[in-house]
Image 1: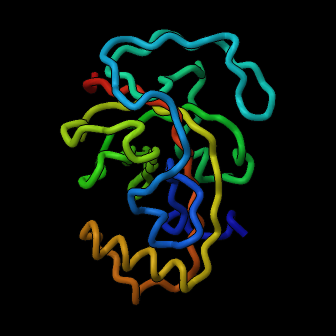
Image 2: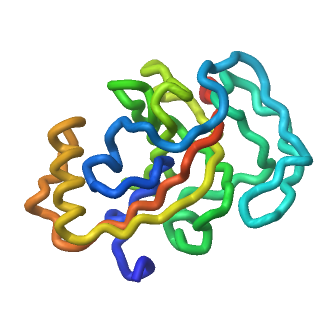
Image 3: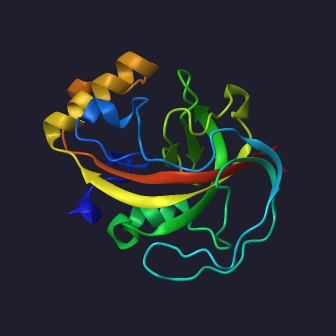
Length: 199
């Protein structure tokens, strides 16, 4: 059960659905999302946009900053800790998440990690390679991101392969030999984002 797994074993990724564990973190073709080039300026929401699940969101207030993809349309944010606490309740739903950017894909700028309020909590916002490219200097800035939540429950072996890939490609400190339970990967297929300086 997801609720019985330790929060350190649950990761929130904004990513694409993939079959192989190593591909979960790798740059890949991913879902098609929004515009390829970022635009500088503000993004206004649309009261006519329909979120997954049939709900019509309230128009989002203008979000100032550098806009990527379709931008941000939802007015209400879902807290990172709420997604991690009950990820299956959010599967297939479009959500808005906010946080400080703590890492950016060094290869293609196709993902960025957002910090949650508790130590070890983070969200990976993953998009299709080339559809949106996040600059390395975005680290330390604030991001407002939007996309559809998906959950992938890995086996113990897949979890070890995933951790080994993270260690090899990105210098992650976790040793694959220390993995004793399977990981549940919660991700959001990214459709848009706005990045700004922290307040």
